[in-house]
Amino acid sequence: MIFLTVGTLFPFDRLVRAVDDAVKSGLVKEPVFAQIGRTSFAPKNIEYVKVLEKHTFDNKVADADYLISHAGIGSIAIALERNKPLLVMPRMKCFKEHVNDHQVATARKFEQLGHVLAAYSVEELPDKIKELSTFRPKPRASQADSVARRIAQFLNELSASARQ
Amino acid sequence: MIQLLKLSKCWEGHEVFYVSTLESVAQKLQKLGRFYIIGECNREHFVQALHVLKNCIRIILREKPDVIISTGAAPPCLLCIAGKVFGAKIVWLDSIANVERLSLSGRIIRPFADFILTQWPEVAERYRSVCYAGFVI
Image (tube, rainbow over all chains, first blue to last red):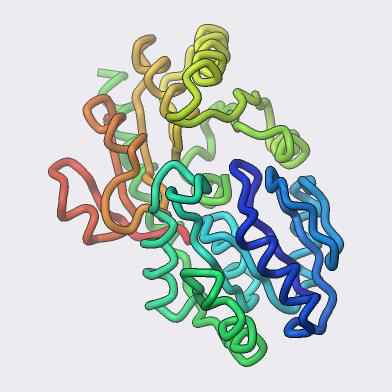
């Protein structure tokens, strides 16, 4: 199963429509389930909902063989955490898909590091979808403990100076 | 939220409450403790932002936090500003989504933040007072 998720903040008709077309044309043979958020386009060839509750969302990710999503950090994070092959397409400001183009830079960075596949346009999408089945994402070891320690240290300094 | 919850060790032993933008994470937050939903907004919806700001001020007045820890974006930025006015210290971990420079909310909060971190070393190099201590994702 392929899980397609585009966040819930802005519409992303381009990606949802492209994946729907890919199913219609037979490029994608496995079933697709989508969380389309505020996307106005109603897919005809894939099962979809507007918004999933977090727990259900996590289960969908766990059940999926591959993920396709916008280049939102929540989606990238969950794919890396579960070691799922992910293809991202960044939202673009010119299509009113986000307030700026930061997703392009995010996609490029995580693509360069070997963590995700990225398509930067609808035209690039079919080839990248074909690549998904053989793509093995490079694992990324979180340094959350080191960041948490650094912040804890700051909090301790604060309480120490408050006591003085 | 994914990024923030990875830091939960740093507030162990402190009294804590949570603030999120979305109802869809309410169930998950409920398990962690006291939580509030402030709603979603961005730079393009001024009226909605005012509504979020009103929620933020209400929470700040009720909880009177000593410290606010946030990973952004716009709605938590409003919470931080409201908190700062009422004496809270601000810890800002800029989202890893911002690979070239600080997020807009990060840049807005920078003059008010008491401790500000990015998750990319090359972003830290661009700003004085922005620290890099690794990445959470």
